[in-house]
Length: 281
Image 1 (tube, helix red, strand yellow):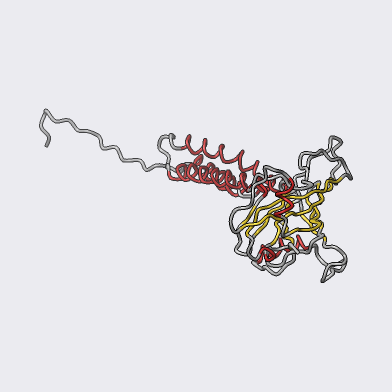
Image 2: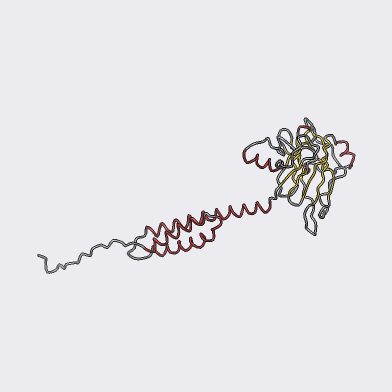
């Protein structure tokens, strides 16, 4: 028996949470959106589905009497999918930028050069690019196997030809201008004669972007800016050229005097073009 002062309290059976349909839908949408976010051509679909799944997943967490596991999973998957989508998007943009601003570079050796290529053989610059992918260094146009003087390097709107190299040009450089200083100990001046031809079609023309550097046998690079000198018959990189026009002149470089003939020239025809290596003799 119960005392008069005691009252009975009803025992309510605990209700187990029911299936969260909205959470399941959100999880499915998040999974599908994550898949599309990984496909470069279908990124836009992922960008639509993932935010939708994220919002539905959050809403499902606040439904009373519903399981929250699928909603939490939907939120997590949508966040991860968004991060992956951003990475894929940036990769696609970077690749597109690289393709737009990295014109194809080709190189054509003179017909009288040793080892004349047939018309069906690949261009040296293409061989060098293939060699870089598979780790080979035997292709023409690489530092280990440079192309001969007279090679035409073409990239974008420009074709650059290395006409000749004077490996003992110190006297000529010093005689050109009274302010030209003698080379540093153990170094000498060389003169590289180049021709840059504008093959673009811009009606306003363009200035040459040709770059020529010397790479020593040890692998060190020496550029035109290493020494403030005036070259005899200097190459004019500030002149404006129009379609079919060309500029010829010398580039003076201060390089190590020892074993100077064993170095190579690194030639770039356009600002975003690939480097092609040319022999100094």
